[in-house]
Amino acid sequence: MEPAKEEITDKMEKLKVEEEEEKKELPEEKKGEEEVQIGEGIQDWRRNQESAFLSSSTSWDDEKLAIPEKIKQALRDAEVLRPSKIQAYAIPLVTEDPERSIVAQSQNGSGKTFAFSLCSLLRIDENDSNLQVLVLAHTRELVNQIWEQIQILNKYTKYNITQVKKEEKKPTIGQITVMTAGKCKTLMKLKKINFSSIKMIVIDEADHFFGSEEDRAVTTRLIQEIDEKCPKVQKLFFSATYEEHVRDAIRGIIPESSISIKVKSKKLTLKGVKQLYFVAKEVRKFNVVEDLYNEFDNTQMIVFVNTKKFGEMAHAHMTGKGYKSSIITGNVDPEERDRIMAQFRNRELQFIFATNVLSRGIDISDMKLMINLDVPFIKDADGFENADYENYLHRIGRTGRFDTKGVALTIIDGSERRFDKEMDVLKQIQEHYESNIEELKNIEDLPEIYNEHCNND
Image (cartoon, rainbow, N blue to C red):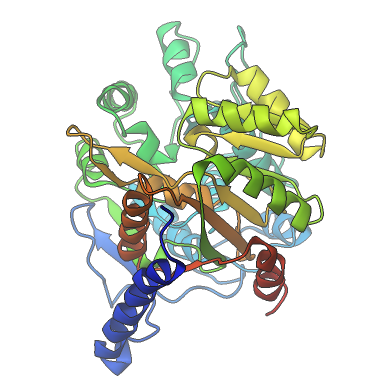
């Protein structure tokens, strides 16, 4: 039996009331306060009221940023007129003397890539052609996107910026080089990478590198090997989320003098993203996606699923209806994934169904609508379903990037077997991020909600 609409609304309204009550209890001077913490050492995430960098710079001309004119011109050409918060906080801390390692946390779409790209360019000695900054990412797609972002800023400085692809036998190593950790490990083993001039290592999506026990071991050993060759190398870690075990792992490989920058969890959900949920029985979820496509005048969609099997079912349904669809899961090889993403960007595909492999590092500038065909959850050792906070955040971060607006819709299974479990997971997510996930009662209402949210200042 499908739950009554009143029951669904009551559950979410109760949360909304509780949130409003909590806000009323805050002292007046705390309301609207910037929730950014800068601490000495990764163990100390405290709020430092005396920091010179807590007020976001409003111009690239700010003397604390010390941006050279050639890079400022590239920023103007790219229409990046002022630094985002993470850029304003991170750049002075990275470039100050003495150099210290940084662990930075900021939401998706907040400008993290430009932040460490700028930091990388500012560390280059143009008279030294050797590798000076190594940037590590966990997928080929992300490697390419980072390389493209750095090249935008490198328009007038013209440093040698390279990316190393998996299949390259004789890669070119530039002054700044972007690659996966696996490729870096291979090149080190073959003695094809020279660290004699290395100044900085950047690890993007750091939580991914330390997520599993195996990933932690591989990443830790890689950094330790580089440290053995260059003990003074500066390390920058950037991510939208850091679980406690990830912080523990990073804590073991950085100096005590390192600095942390953190945004509190309730500030991590993108302020420009309107979060909604819609209740439909699982057998109707594919029809809901089809309805959304038609309601939105044939807009492209990335639709996230929890499992490869469900993604394949959704893909088969849409192709069977004549839509141009594709699927990206963990077992799709990198070359095929690149091909699918190129097709999507060229508007040759209407849908991509994807597991969490696509929830990170994919930047499609005009993506305004994101669909969760499943509410993201993780099963514990006893089989209980708990909210997957991290991947929920990364998924909805595919829209509303760089201070734009977007809509994220999670489709809840309304069957008697699944409804209570999935609503509980959604409640966990809402409480964790202190966000408001509203119910969408009718699919046909979404275009109006979307236009009101995205097109009004």
